[in-house]
Image (tube, rainbow, N blue to C red):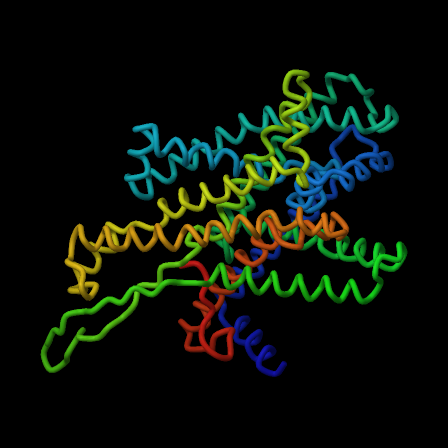
Length: 440
């Protein structure tokens, strides 16, 4: 405890870090406040039916968790940042097949700004589809008394659509500001805060189930918590696991000093894509819900709205595996690694510099990504198995899957950044032994 208090004091002694943390907390507080602001034209006292629908639907319940309860509150932030993530997926896929976007990816910072601008435009297009779908769900679930201007009022539909679009764009702006001037990745932190906000409610629901329905009582609750802890530890191991590739540097004499001549390691992460594949895959799984109101596609929407169903989990696992490979290919560049080693006089023992080194690193990444992606997919579909074993569906969503992976990944990344500030100012790190190995 003394070590923890001393570390917290050291964090707030660093002025830049203190300002970044307070700035981040302030923007997250604004986001949480907006999650309780109801869309103008809806009576907040008549939202009980919507809450019951959210609690009884696994996929919509998951969307409600991502939005921090804003979905069930009919809030101005009800759609959260998922439309932005969906647009990001499309833009990154276009970067593979469209020459214009391929060129932007190679232009450095200016190209990144242009791609971000295209992502914002596409986010508005996605919102023009999702906002009316959300309002149609409100019309189906809420009684007539919930709508101040009337159920079929064009003025309400138009104004609510504009409000939902503006709300999501504002949340997206908050995320970008946190990334630029705060600590951690802004969009990921916003999702994480929404998840943490729903965790106490889910845990209380599980406790209530165990003690009121005579389904095991305290013993089963303790078993569930222990299993949850083990899954948590396995997820941390997945996020932090690395394959060390030895690199030997040539010996150089500069003046009276010797440089190089030592063996170092390149840490290749088994899950180099971290939490992004699970977010991307989950965003795509929401698309079939858009077609639920069309008679020809109602069956498809119903199939992919059941998060306990076989086809939902099968397709979800395949998407996680595919996006793991896709995002790893984007973030890990063997050509750049080989060029950096060659420039600094380094080489992998037994491997020729140049193309042989590129092929060697690429082969290792392909081999270690396969088990990493499969394990990631297993963790992603664990909530379905937890529900089948009798765990309350609200708590089951935290028993693995998207929620747990986002919590672990985002917390480790944020702590990694905080620790870098501490070590830069010659303070001790957050861990008593070793350093936090977050995403590089």
